[in-house]
Length: 430
Ligand code: AMP
Ligand code: GLY
Image (cartoon, rainbow, N blue to C red; front, side, top):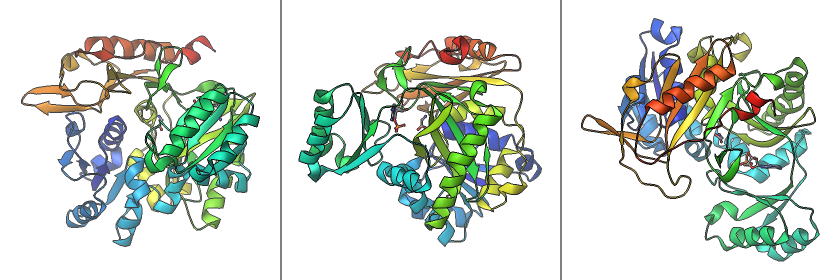
């Protein structure tokens, strides 16, 4: 069995780990390839020097090497149509087509889809950058806080929560000038601010049926207590038991996942792969904040180590329309992923710092690598988010958190930065 993973961050490292450790992969003398090189993924996979955005070269590689399944990690190749490219060549791929990936690549499309399918989400209004006067008038009449979102992909930076008209107007000008967001904000939307608790839910689907993986919780802000700038995610915990009640699972399935999959199929945009549901739970009711067309990062680094059933078979089942046959088993365990970042992230930061102490980590801990590279015998930092340190426990979340932090403390590099409170909501029942 030959598998190619596209992308090479912490999420793809965790996917490589889960595939590599699946029984079906071992049974079938599996060989794993991954685009780019990163000393963490090289433990499991052979590195392929093709960019994730070079779709033609990737499909040629897959054809030439008889790849049985390609797993697309990040949103950019999916939004460019990597699945369409592979399917047109008769190759199997885990991930949605370009038309289906629009659920993430256009927030306006996504909101309109939700409206059409009757999915609970915050009320919204869309504008184009030519509508600046209408938008300004609307902002003048709005209640605050108000959420403003650029329509296109903006690496988590296209969402602004404006506390008052002045802040909203500044954002409006930024969106319309095109300087900061480029084409991403040619269109944008305003959305009612929801108060509640966020949870990430991964639905792995073949377009018709789906399975829900254990719920996780991201920590998106750079500083403790969810303060400061928005980031790609500074840590995650799994499972979020308080939301995994039969009643909530029923609501998420019947009000969100099923209607969306049905609507997409009806619209000729059948969604296969991982539908990431970013939810806000407001007084026991789930509302969709965003959909993504892929696994989340760093949630994946917390979720996948808890999957007991064969992960590789799950991905094949999605690509081969056999999710209804798949029986998901989850370990009765807890996980906590702490992201070690370079000081300065999400703005500017230095790279090239020597990382030590990786060999001292261990026990119930897995270290996934994201922004790292090898020079000679050394591993050095090469990105904003450098490592994902996942602690696992059979007994409690607090034990998983403790393990993650003990191991995070053993790893050293200059300008190492990490949040000290991952899991605070679940641990303190906030
Ligand atoms: P998004 O990229 O749409 O997930 O937004 C990024 C973050 O902004 C989310 O994780 C939330 O914390 C916050 N956010 C987005 N939309 C809303 C909303 N309608 N109400 C409250 N917070 C929101
Ligand atoms: N952790 C948020 C995301 O992957 O979009």
